[in-house]
Image (cartoon, rainbow, N blue to C red):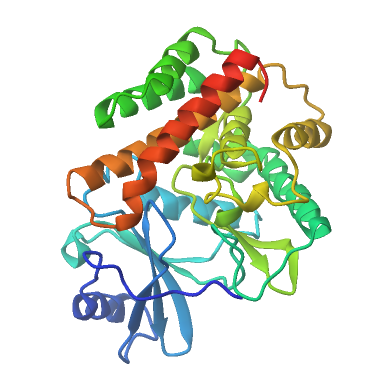
Length: 351
């Protein structure tokens, strides 16, 4: 039931001797031989399980062949964990060490303590069934956690140093459109149309908050004895200070419903009975924040487009042969589904 590591995928192996030699020199408890496995379900940064004696760690490094100067900044992700802990936010793993020596692995990486628990990925864990009432409560707990993050005081916590909220929406629209153009492999009309529509339909009002930018079920560690309790939130690589409704839009893009394309359902089990619908997510978020959202179609369309671009960037690396992971061959279908969902929302003026 608890999320478990597996064998390391071909082409993503670590140099165990070099890694252990380095860790032995900077941390206690690495005198004996370590064992390394990989958490196999992620699509972005590579995540490894490191067992050193009776201590369990997780190592995060950028994907093979990625542009590590932008979306895969390990030093920044490490600092996010440090700052959130210092701000009193308990639901993040404890960051242990940041390695900036490129001679060890060819890139920066960091180590954190493992938080063991259940992670809901593309299917229910073996021998686990979840009732509709439990899913309903988990939906609420998930949005409660997102709202809590958005309400963190930026100034007293020092989180204000992690981003530039002025002009955030415009920068995001322009930046993700450019990323799509730079990584495009196929002509997908809906993605091009949505990119153009967003440029012309940006909301005029914006707020500033600390945002996760990848908030979904499979980035939550749940208590195996109570699946409505969130023990930790993972994958802070895109966290920043910006418009919280852009964060909500990304969550909605991942929030698959039963009528959505099957291509979108591996991201979240939100399509299973009992979960909120996307409209219920918005209603509950508005209730908890006491903020009326008037431009939800824009934020949802942006989220769907962004998820499509993230998949496009990975798919491009697969097409170029930089990564051999066979899962990535199917990402083209997710990109098309994201584009269609965004375009349909714009045409219907509802999510």
